[in-house]
Length: 586
Image (cartoon, rainbow, N blue to C red; front, top):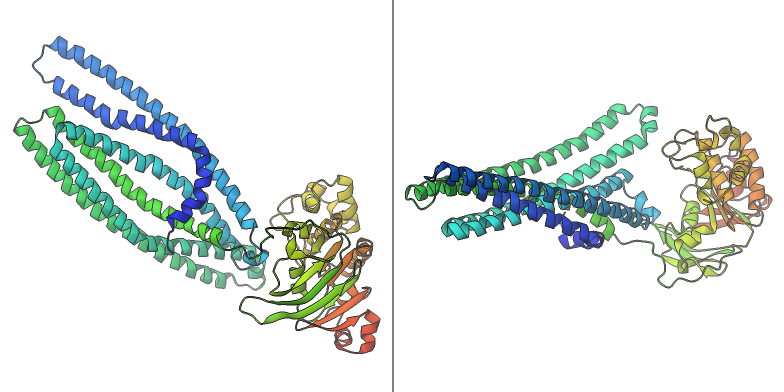
């Protein structure tokens, strides 16, 4: 995976620049602190070292030493104040920007279609998204604590040495440039290792999340050992890629250590000769050695930090790739005002196929009158669910158009379209929130009376009222604390609360027992009044009373009519009816 720094900066900069004042305080505070601690303090110690063994009278030495002592105290106090200002400023800067990045990532992900999330591990998406903010924190720290520290320190040291020992200044400058260039070369070579490690980590997170979410299947089919072996295979791959990345970093450390050792030996040898020849004082000898060790420390940390920075950018690149993924379903640039009121639905010469697959619908035509109740029947793969996905714009038609009250659904925003459709899927997944919040999700300003009323109609109040916390009961992640039937009744209540002209029930009663279903059918009878309704069902008994039943086969309408009319035709519907047990298609 190639790291595109310009694309990373493209997404980070708009959020970071809004807090430039905080970051300016970071740089100012740390600059003052570095100059005081790394540059001036060693200079004062140099003066003390030169002063103490001098031939001056002791009272003069003592007096000057006390003055230098006061200077040291002031430097220590001021440098601590400056650093603390920088610390508070960077805490404010990073926390504000990280919050904005979290919000931006969440908003950006929600722009993608349902199809995008169906094709990607949810756990992997979450892991990549979290890495963005963590990686920004790493980069901000590296820029502030390493790159800026190193730049200011190196500049200060070179200025002092140019004024005192120009030759050593050139040596330090040349060595530092070579060291940094070599470090950058190592980092460039290490990028592929980090990219493979990041991809492997995302796969592990995705596989881990997938297993946890499907733990019921693992237990039911006694596949603990199989899943353990499968998971170990991806962790083995991750471990190998991580070890290769770390070993490459260790090789880099060997090369950098060798360079530092060579410079240390040369400077010490050169320094001794200068002192022996009387060209530098003992204090200057110590100052040069001190500056060298300070330089070693900051450049060593800089090298390690630049390696971490590239890994952080590699992690960020995974999220940037998601950001750069084209949004497959877009709202119109020049949207029309919403005109949908009655709910007449027209599929006009619609063709659709999933990526790389055969056409699911081809030149499909369907006209559903306002207020009409239509049941869709057919074997798996006939196109029933595809019709509802296209109606809700979870996917877009390849050809043709879908009109509601004469308005092309592509000419209005997705949110406007879905605001006029109540939808209950085959498998309802709830938020890890209270029952009250889950029901009112379709109408956030709903009163308690409205929530309880629809819960009673959906026969959810029967079990909710028996819970210790009633409607304030948390349902668990994806609603796992409730049974399938209970989750479905909550979802049905949520759809009832939404006053929409169009109602879509995608096997909405499939998880209910026969008694509950009979109650729900009565409630649906009231709910469907005045609404255009599409019901998908394998249990044919649930659609007997529909105004029209449409039998689909391979993406085409094979038969249509009322229940009795279709039985008289003795076609596919009659065959399905005759081969069902308890109302289910076999």
